[in-house]
Amino acid sequence: MTDEALMLWGVVFSSIGLGFFIYGKKQHRLIPLISGLALMVLPYFIDSVALLVSACIALIALPYFIRL
Image (cartoon, rainbow, N blue to C red; front, side):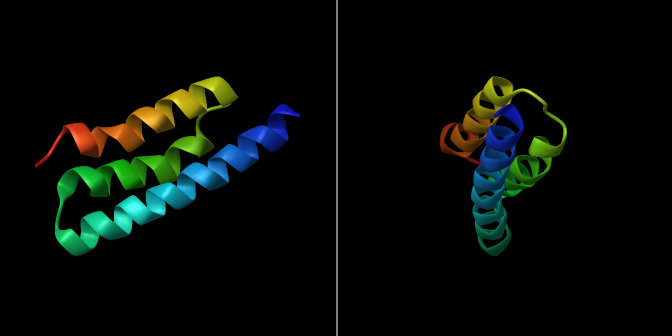
């Protein structure tokens, strides 16, 4: 069950990351661009579902708190 959940969360957070990446690229904003790139790459390196969800939620919230 863990492998399926990990794959599903990886797809969800990678698609959110793609949206952040496209937004950052079009608006020339550095933080959403980097956050989106990290969201797309991070699921490849984390093996725990709880750690993946918490790290990705932190990356999603990052552009809202840091504005550059």
